[in-house]
Image 1: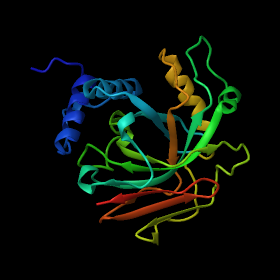
Image 2: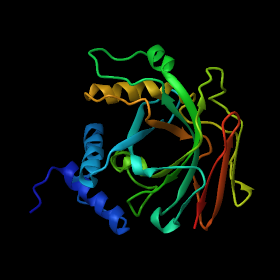
Image 3: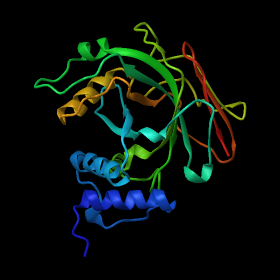
Image 4: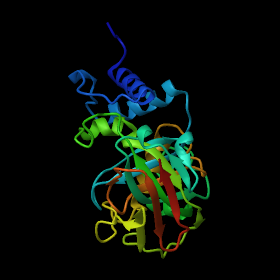
Length: 254
């Protein structure tokens, strides 16, 4: 009988599913996260089982005033523009165009939370990114939200564009952008992040990370949710994204 804690057991199943490219079906009811603490504990167990370090975070919210959630990103899942990926490694290959930030100094643990003003004052750089969304569950996207959170928020890979200095006057809520797959636009409508201005997510992240006694390094790449929804690639091809005011970013699917 498996006597491991449910979060550790779920983490092992997720690691095995990724390693073996064998998506999970329905699990025993007791293995699903019962709350946010369970989901975040599963994330940490995945990193421990894989023996990997974080190189960033993905964070997001479903609305401009809704709760924020996130997942650390494995350092080896961060890639340079123009990188190539095998579709078979990232089923079902969802593609999103996002904005990422880096801070200009570390945020260290302390007794009181950091204020939004402190966090925003620490933003140093910004860049366009493309996330490859890839679930370890066969039923995705019809997977319960806490389970998606435990599964590193369905993270597959992140292609990180060239960073440029942060601009406080940048139109973060509605940037001008383009996203094409094999030279055809896949932007479904007006560009918008469901969280509104994605900078509002950063204060949650700094405090979530430092409350756990961990320093948030300034070189972490923090990507903040899609401005273009999720496009599922059904074939090989070239994806090109551009957010006006930042260098373009691209990837190849083979």
